[in-house]
Image (cartoon, rainbow, N blue to C red):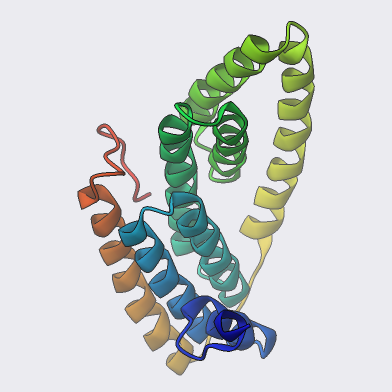
Length: 196
């Protein structure tokens, strides 16, 4: 119970700020949580925090940084899939599916194709018919994420100068988070460009 009421928990504080529509403060706290999770080796939790921060930035009209965070979430999920394969095929498949979704959301077709091939191959290794089900799943997820991308890119939000200053600070925090992820031994992507 203490963990759920702990005021020092950045995740819970981010949720509170998001509920009160203070999206800039919420995004900052989600980024703090993502950094903490990367340091702790919890890549799926870090990816979730990146997505939540991206959602807040979308609400503020900062689509470029939101896409950068969705891309980072995709990379975190993909790396988690690689790490999980040794102990849980189910977690590895789950992570690949989420990586695929976020690659579609940021229109990174090459990475989406790479991940989809691994997802289908893993599904087939579990069940002879898994590849058919996996293909249907990917098709449905693609349609949903393409609609989400269209909606995100068409959102027009005007920001006042105070929010603009906060967005500049958040942009710097995103850069630090990406550097942290690149330097973390658990997360060493090949020469992929995370910033778009």
